[in-house]
Each structure stands twice: as structure tokens, then as C-alpha cells.
Length: 287
Image (cartoon, rainbow, N blue to C red):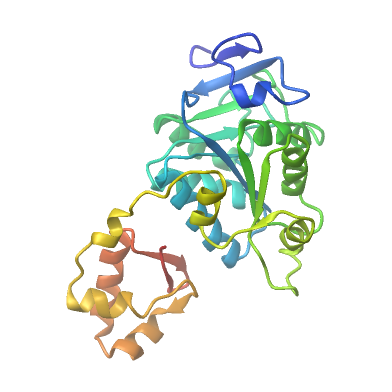
């Protein structure tokens, strides 16, 4: 398997932050390129995300990747996959840590094998402490969570219920004396219970990527999108949007513009990176 290589604990190519943890893997199997200088931050959460979880994961991962951070996650369905996708959209680097072998036939989940290939093609990497051909087990996923936390200067949990593997990653981060960040949820939210619990226990409550950048000592870059010159119609639609999802029909009503004009303009704004379509004709401002 010519595209798979190994890095042992004594190698200068071994990730320095991972080497610092109490139980680093003695050998890493790698496909792609590990960042030489980029700061890594883990973004993790539930496999059964809500639309809110989708929105905040995309917003944070995209913003952090644009600021130069490498996004680390586990390639799982739900929040993990969304974090990788958002980093790729931002043309940033991302690392997927697997609980399986990293050969094509054993990348898990199988539905994310194409995502794994895009991560590698974009200059990122997929890694595992397990050899090619290894079939994932109930024990390999919790074990790989320590690697996700160990690679990263901090861990962000965007959405997690009471029992979630994402909380295991956060607890590892605490054990390794790394930062833990959590996105707040409604107190009635079962799928957000884990995030609220982390905040109650001392994790930093964050509401934007800038909160994390300040906390880890990185000055936010000036966003070139702020300098974008909008037409009168684009501005009318853009100014109606917030971080709260708004249906296209509400935009048509608020702006009194023709439906086709609103739909076309939203597409242009989305291509500019200014708005995000959440599905179901719902749009938000992409901060």
C-alpha cells in the first residue's frame, strides 16, 4: 500500500503535542500530509446532529480553518463529518483520526470514504494507530479519541447528548491540560446536554470562532468578506439575515423582491461565502 506510511514515537515527524500525552501511540499509520507548523484544534460532537448543530459546527470549523488552524476530528457521521467538510470548504487543512485501518477497504464509516480521499487530496491526512486491515471495535473508537485530543491545542464540542464519545474526547483534553470549549444549547435540549454540562464544569462557553482564537492567543485575521461590495439588492437580502435560520419566503416578504430574484441572489451570496443554506430553504448569515 504505497500511499500509507508510518511514523514512530522517536521520529522527528511525530506530532509534538501528541508526544506529550501520557499514553501516545507508539506508531501512527498515515495517509496524506500532517501539518508541519499549523496549530490543530479538535471539533467533535454527536453522530445525530440537529440543524443547530450543523449550523454552529460549520460556522466554527470554517472560521477556525480560515484563521489558519488545522481541524481535527474523527470522520464519523454527524458533527465530525460536518467539521471536516467545513474545513475543506474554507480551503483549510483537516486531519481525520480513525478507529479502523486507513486502507480503502477499512476506512470507517464506509459512507465517508470519499470524504477521506478529499481530505488527503486537499493537503490533509487520515491517521490511525491501527494497521491496514484492522476492523473497528467498540474499544477502538474511545481509544482513538485520546489521539484527537492529543493532537490538538484544544477541543471544541459543538453538540453532544449526555452519553457521547465527544465527551470522552473532552475529558481526555482536560487530562492532557488542554483547553476545552463548548457551544451552549437550550436547557431543554437533550442533544445539547453534554455541552451544557461541560460549561457547568468549567469549559469555556463560546459563541463564535473569535472567542476560541482569543483564548488560544491567535489574533483573528481581517476577513476579506467584510470588504465585499454588495449591490443594492444583495445588501437588502443580506441585511435581513442573522445567525437565526430564515426561510426564503420570509426573505421575499421582507424585501418585497421577486422570488426568482431572491433565490438567484442568495446563490450569489452563498458563492461569496456570505450566507449559508441549511437545507429546507433556510438561510443564515455566514459569520
